[in-house]
Length: 370
Image 1 (tube, one colour):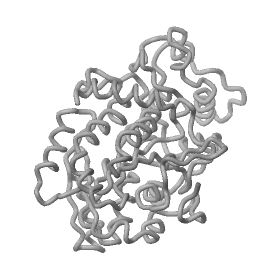
Image 2 (cartoon, rainbow, N blue to C red; image 1 turned 60 degrees about the vertical axis):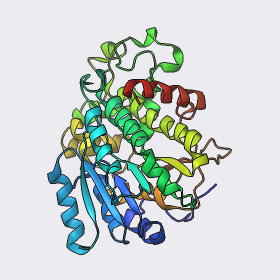
Image 3 (tube, rainbow, N blue to C red; image 1 turned 90 degrees about the horizontal axis):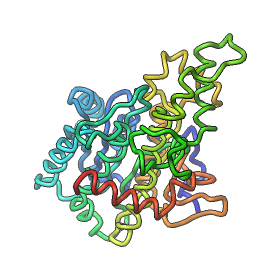
């Protein structure tokens, strides 16, 4: 079980990946959600633009950030067709409007690759989405918005799959942060204490506390014996920011499992990726850049550039050798990638369980009424 380029690794860039698969880009249509100059969506866009795509569609809540990326593309590749798609993933009405505009556009016969790139990071306090039945905002944005968009755009994706080439793909940006928490089917909004949840729904306190301690030590580097977070006892009973983020990333993985189960036979395959640690707006709640550097030094993690952070996304989107149905003896699964390769050791059991994936699929259909 491998990719077409075993030499690709943690420092490989999206530019390099795109150059390795130009025929998988040329004359094809890509939709990338959440494109802005400071995120990996921009690096994804810039790499794709170098190899003559038919059309690049970039979603964003505001036009200005997307327009900056398009201007950057046109400064070197003026003939590449680009389009801004107004989209707020936390609003089902916005998602439906965006999908409708694409479905009704006769100039877009098919969407070949959908990259569900947009996302929101750890929210310090519980916030809910008004649009999705007051669901916790990270779950609503990172999962439900993309779930609804993907389902609505299936006619365009199936039109692409009709060519029989097997290169129609749906890419979901997950994270190793999925290991913070499974799906709390009985408490999506994190209102109950851990002890009130069934054991399979409880968050991973070991991972969460490691992250919390690193944040405390970064904020107070001279404190050699940091104490538990002042709100640790309360958080163990109620909302945990990193846990809620982890739940949404688990949902991205389970969505990938369900998509393959439902669509693989129709010529569409799905992959989830862990892009790595990139300094984007997702980390804006962790302090200034110096504090962020210290947190990740203590977690023994290195920052990637935007171009490096987008590389695994493009391996998942373009590599013809990938097969989501494969698996390894180490627990790895063919649909989960990191550092441009199939993720060694795979993902947490709760993020690849097919029964859980189907349960999430059905629950999501009910929540979005689709």
